[in-house]
Image 1 (cartoon, one colour):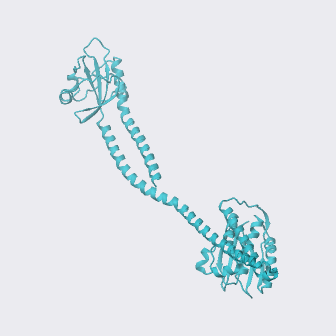
Image 2 (cartoon, rainbow, N blue to C red):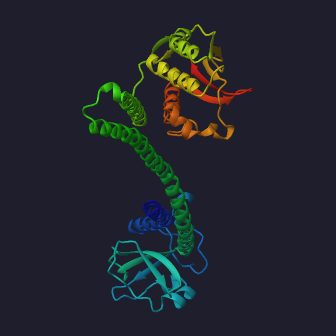
Image 3 (spheres, helix red, strand yellow):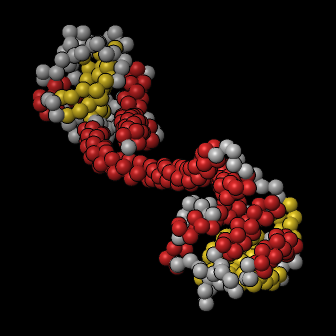
Length: 418
């Protein structure tokens, strides 16, 4: 948040200085240009006549003669002639009111010759002036000073400074709010990722610890009776092998998800005939279902090919069929249906098993989520299969969802682009 606030403040400060400098230089540029132009006309000894209309209080002031109206000098310019001793010699031309009120005690400053300088008279009126030496040796004028009033410009600059100050205060308040909101928004996925990682490590540790504990206990029992025959310890050995296979599958699933998170796994895309693949994968499961006195049916109506990774689609179907077999009982049915819909291939795996509670359907694709942990332990599930299935579908730019059957059980609907 502080870094964001600092970045906003630096950017706005630089921006304000640039704008202020541009405004100031723009406001004074025309006045400075008029002073330079007036100086050029005086130093070039342009004839001064009465053809130009004099200004009030400047009836005797000389102006350069020019036929072009666009080249006329700025009427705000006041000309002051100084002698070598620093006395004003053209009081009458300046105007008695202006001279008596403002220039009576005004000293000649010769430190900035031929340089446009800012000055304030009576601490009230702002002028820019240009002082230069007079080149005519036939008169008593030693220096000529051109003054132009810039009160209007200074007022604009003063108001602009106030405006920038007010905007700065408002901007700081907005920056604090924006920095807080942006920081919170940026931290949200990081915190979410951290929490998921912590949960993932905790669940993985728990799932790994259980089979390792069982294997360790069974091996310790075997070591206590080294003279026993294998046949006498068959149950311990079989259970250890079962937990080893379970541990191997869990490790493989964890590795798959880890690679999926790091985007290391690339799909080997090829043309895959949907119905042929589904039929081949379902073959062994039909035999298993019959041995468990379950009804297994197929309704394949999608004889088209899709661009997909055949190995991953095979894995997807295995996950869905495994779940269907695990959570169905005798006389239940398991079915697989394929069809085309709106330029998509649809694969449905349905069952009439115990089903999923409607309020839990939004969580079933989360890692390590199991609706009934006790039953999942009996069937060997750890809650990673559907997470892998969702990843496979998403990598193929498809969708997967679960719905509740009208009677009982669930249906998983997978849609893949053709």
